[in-house]
Amino acid sequence: MSCQRGNVARTRPQRHQNAQAFRNDRHDASARRKKINAKIHEGLCQHCKEVLEWRVKFNKYKPLTQPKKW
Ligand SMILES: [Zn+2]
Image 1 (cartoon, rainbow, N blue to C red):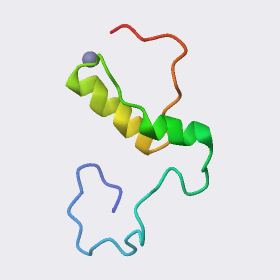
Image 2: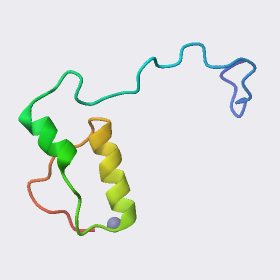
Image 3: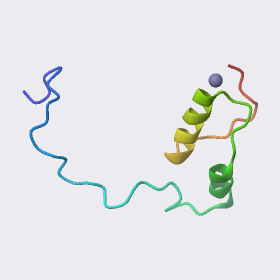
C-alpha cells in the first residue's frame, strides 16, 4: 500500500516540478500586498520572525490589529 504508515521511500522522482516558484503577488498587486511583503518584523525572537516571514510568503499572513504577546 502506498499510503501505508511509514512507507515513505519513493521509487520515482516527483513527476511535475513547479515551473515557477509560488509567488504571493502574482494575482494580487494591491498596495496591501506590497505593504505586507515589505513589512519588517521587529521586536520578535528569531523563531517568531521566521514563522511570520513564512506566513507572508505563502499568503497565510493577516496583519494583527494588536501586537501579540508570547
Ligand atoms: Zn518568539
